[in-house]
Length: 296
Figure 1 (cartoon, rainbow, N blue to C red):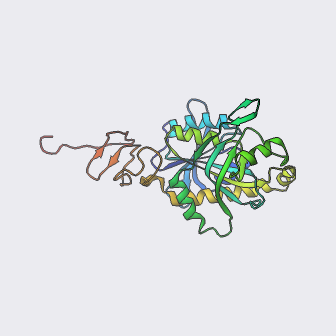
Figure 2 (cartoon, rainbow, N blue to C red):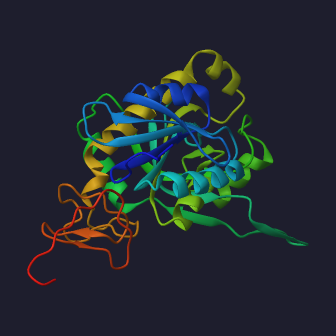
């Protein structure tokens, strides 16, 4: 089985089934495929109303699983960008249920050293792709029904359901600019960075990371938050146009001259200039037809 045409592909990932259902609603002409190595199922199709190809997958929870699977999926599908879309807990009172947080950066909150003086944090942070953030800022101007915040997101291997817990106080004190907390973003950001891809986290707020989480979930807040996050993610991709070789793109080959020329299936570093293809520094994917000219 051949992998899908990849020049315009974006990998859109979720952890939960309800998050995937919200994303899936924006993908047309879906075709199911299975990773030839680890068996991960993806659906490949088009973003509704566009030519942008989307490969979507539901990966399950946890940052380590997320990182491992994204690395394998990127190696297989060779997408231009990675979006992780889903729900999160809000950390500030001014971030309401159903609001969407677009991650300007993602913190990994569990690094540190325990000393007699206490825990000395050794945090990691991954900044969101400038190209995707810029596309997001442009896209949400036309979405007056959605409140969107461009702020940092904290990722940890825990679910906060007590705002007065030691873990919650630790996040508020040490990661004071983070406005949302979830469990996969750091794995997604780390894998995308290692693979040289643009990456962005888009999270709908489904609870306030407090004792009211269970009641909020039972009231349908996760479904609403996932729907809002998916709507924002789709709007971002409509502005991002990953097949055009974005200037300033964080992946290899982004912004190369002629990268958006018609008929090109160029991978990172390959350029199409109308009368020839330059393979130097890159790989070209797709059929090639050549002809002799003169003695050459």
